[in-house]
Amino acid sequence: AQSVTQPDIHITVSEGASLELRCNYSYGATPYLFWYVQSPGQGLQLLLKYFSGDTLVQGIKGFEAEFKRSQSSFNLRKPSVHWSDAAEYFCAVGAGQAGTALIFGKGTTLSVSS
Amino acid sequence: GAVVSQHPSRVICKSGTSVKIECRSLDFQATTMFWYRQFPKQSLMLMATSNEGSKATYEQGVEKDKFLINHASLTLSTLTVTSAHPEDSSFYICSASPRAGAGYEQYFGPGTRLTVT
Image (cartoon, rainbow over all chains, first blue to last red; front, top):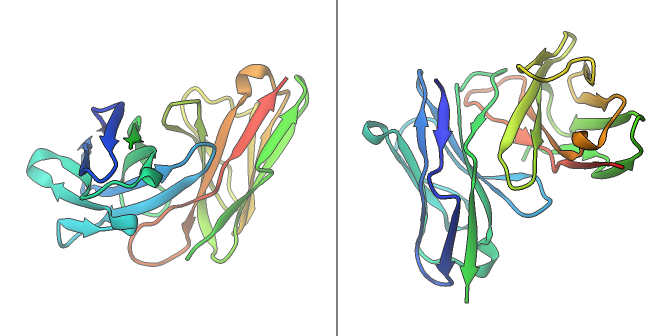
């Protein structure tokens, strides 16, 4: 079955500390992987995506993610978290074909403490 | 960048009435649009996939007679919640997939908060 697992429901990180949000996927075909961020009451903003090539992808706002096929993972990282990073983060996987929807994980809520 | 808009952003309606939500791709043509529903503190659940000029494909458990989807043009899809009830209160998000181009992309709208009283 196709699925995305985000093991951590809620993470609290001190401002300035590093961050890693975990994402594991189960997908029958070549996965196209995404990370989105959602602020309360807002839509989704794409942070970064992986289609092919270099397995370490850079995104906006200083985020990066590494695709590890052997581990079926696509973890999101940021070296130094800012208070404005507090939000809900969703990992998603797709087939890479027009007309196919994304499968989302349940999300990880990030809180940033001062 | 590609922009998807939704209107209204927030709507309150009385139980039994119908509500229409519009999803527009502002600067690209969208062959396919998707409608998702998000309950508080939960993930996005796909409701249906709509292709321009054809009937929408609904996910299992989604009532097609209650959630009417029309994709009349390459830039507009509408979701009508018919005879809305309080349990339909939710955050509805659409996304649009461009007509052509390498690399799969979906662009999300800002969402519509529906409250049924």
